[in-house]
Length: 561
Image 1 (cartoon, helix red, strand yellow):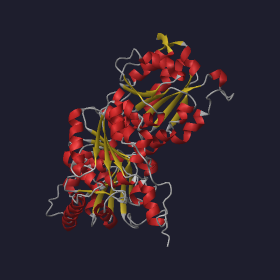
Image 2 (cartoon, one colour):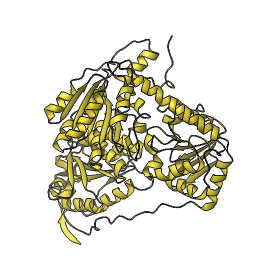
Image 3 (tube, rainbow, N blue to C red):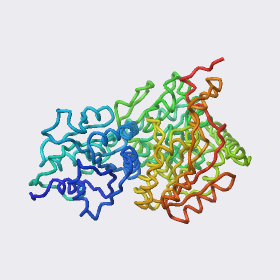
Image 4 (cartoon, rainbow, N blue to C red):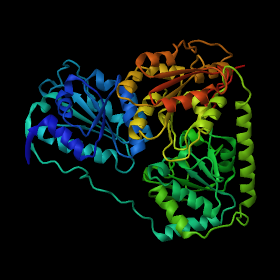
């Protein structure tokens, strides 16, 4: 036991949890913790300009490091309310995040006091757990429990509310040493189950591996690729997870569904067995219809969450386990099949041909030299100059959704997307969090002009905290998804769909970073190369063709005569 101020006890608990990076927006409700952070030289503090952006940073940090990203929300009431979208995105992406949220004093709770809202109830729908500290000496206990819960099983955000008066005490507490959290080993799957899966695959006519976030979280790419190579099985990925395997691997087909490509989608549609590894087969992949996942197809689904098994499609076999561990066990058990003798050799040869034609078509569009730039030109130039270990973040707008299957993803993780939350205004902040998590990697954030306008205040965060990410703003002067729907479904009756933006590159220069303006083919590649050399927070403002937008939600809208 040691006697210390509660703010110091909170910081010591963070240290015990392994925290080395802290995102926050300070406020009077948590000043005792901030005062203790002043002496915590082993913790890098990144102060943000908006709580929602701070949440996206912590979210991305958690996805890259596989440890909870921490955000300290300094102000009760309006401060915590600003976090709701970021918490929602983390909840729907199963990202490990811990939030310390200030709260009004215990003596004033329930009196509709200044800046009081029911924070506990507010957070319940968008978190894995909400915890409210009741006694000052329990602050370290609650914080350590929050980190454990956030990173256990299927991960998610946890909020710890601390009434401000509890931080004003001196307490006697015992805090474990740094790294005192227990290490949890991955449970193994019995051999009989693995042999059953092997038999089902070898008896199939056209089996396919469909992989998702579970492979990424378990860092199971090596096992996935080894399994695919031994059985000569094509790999497809769920929406937003292009980085489950290197995109240049000959057995990698790419994304399934409207955010993917027709080659991978066709493979799943025509398969008679889907080995679904770490994926829910959710809406953005299959839209809950039988258009892609056909009735009667056998599904072997592996997920760490038993509630995910068979939730959307009936499964022949459900396995509660880490997807990468199952892939590795299968790879250990099966005998290698020569490519020339695999039962599905003809299907695989067609895959190689179809993929080659798909990429040739993309390069042809990119090479047309149009002005303003076609999005395909942006992606093609990124493929040429981005380092092999580059890490990309994207928004959910139409230009970014077109990019999910076209970016040069070779390592895990190398793509961070808003996933099922589907929000714009995510990518730039997420890129800053990713860069803090992996400062040695080139981080490139793609977004439209509308989404970047929501978060452009964080340019000052990047400069102040020296976070040298590269933002590529694809400016088509529109809310791209919506104007595409108005064009395709509402007889071009455009209202509210156009956006006026400043020169974001010039704004970044005013903030102290690097800015580049791109209007012609070849200029984006040059700008990215220069930004990497310059080593400053950078914004590349690229003028993009406003007509090169796509309608993704064809399922939800009916065309009008």
